[in-house]
Length: 369
Image 1 (cartoon, one colour):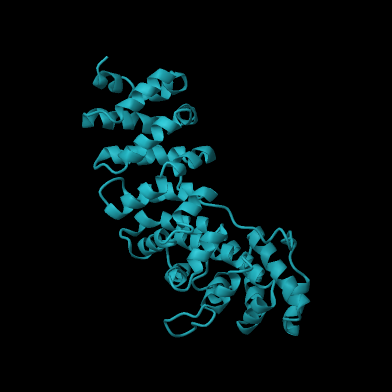
Image 2: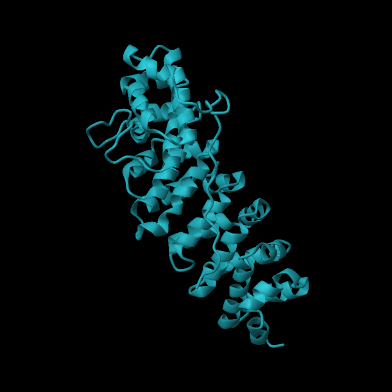
């Protein structure tokens, strides 16, 4: 059969109906068409592959062809037009599988995605960032995007945070914040992010008080992860902003604000409040953190927030904070009665509380028009 006929008969409902029974040699032929000399044939083949990745059966079939397929998809994400969209969508969907992530990272997915973001003439930036969000849920992806041990260590991360703060339209760049959360789950990511010479921390703190909910959630989770690091925690405590006003201990202030019982401009996202409460709990575990929290009147602020809190996990972290404050005689007498009689909830265990939060992928994409 001619290539066009082969491709056309595998479109639409045929994909859903036959993905589970597509033979290996048919997949090989389909993958080969992605590098055909004719643009229309390549585009239709990539569209079919994208469709196959929209379901578990198709992904499982394509998983067996990763070695042949991934290089062709990575090559296609740099092309103009629909080819790059189809290829990037397929990669996003396939990289929900940890095994595929390893293969994709080893074949240069991080570098290709960053090149595509820089050049701006291939796959849409939101798809490339979604791909990076997926691959950085794995340690291998984090180490590559941080360029660990290389002369340009941290360059990719700096570029992503620059895009997060300046990229327009804003929603196209949201998943750069997911990448930030993911890299801070690893020591190399926290080291790169908190290096004062790069100024990355200053760039993301403002997102804690902005309207974009996904960005608030991801930045709060990243700060929480940094607070869990015994080595890097001091960098957060020592950070001084540059915009005047309450610049000293600006990070800690930003973490306290969503859980301080404010009714005007209250934080309505449960995940943001939970991340902030768990971050404060981590800070309260050592003397330097408690000293800063005491200066900022944290026991009183958290008492006010606790009285309004209904989210179970956030309540648990606030109770754990209260117990640490009581243990170290940080609670004024007029607050002690409330803290001695907390509402019923499971208290965060001292050791279990010191783990990194979950990673955030770029989401699952059914189809791209």
